[in-house]
Length: 198
Image (cartoon, rainbow, N blue to C red; front, side, top):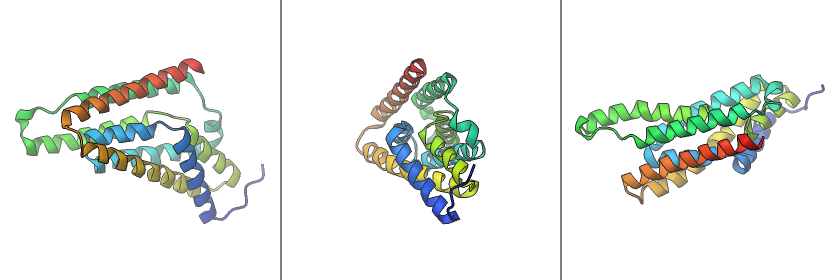
């Protein structure tokens, strides 16, 4: 198979654009990101999101051929379970008697774990990963494609977080907890529905 003749910088831009468009149009993690931003600190949410998606794009780039054919009901089931577990973990509140300082220390690792798992365990073989895998197959530039794809996903994440932060500044904590948990449950139901249709 002949490769697409592009420079490293061109491959980064192509991957950024292709993945950003694919993720904006066909991806639901944007809603999960906004929901998690309602409950946890935006820095923790964004770091969990960024690390999880950088790892997923690395897998997509390295397993390009397999990823382009990867479409299974099991991916939807795993996504649904991850969304439901996230909903439960978001719902559970830290104990008030611990004290504010200790609660902040404990909340950070819990929030980071929830955010990472919410994104790493869901939506494998989605449109963004398939776009990245297809570009690797065409260009044979693994690092450039991974870099551009990761930047595209992070750009989308920053936009979703901005929306989540705007909502968080206007609603009480208990309302935010309910909204976040319900949003994750709805995403889990959608994942099951997609798995049933395939």
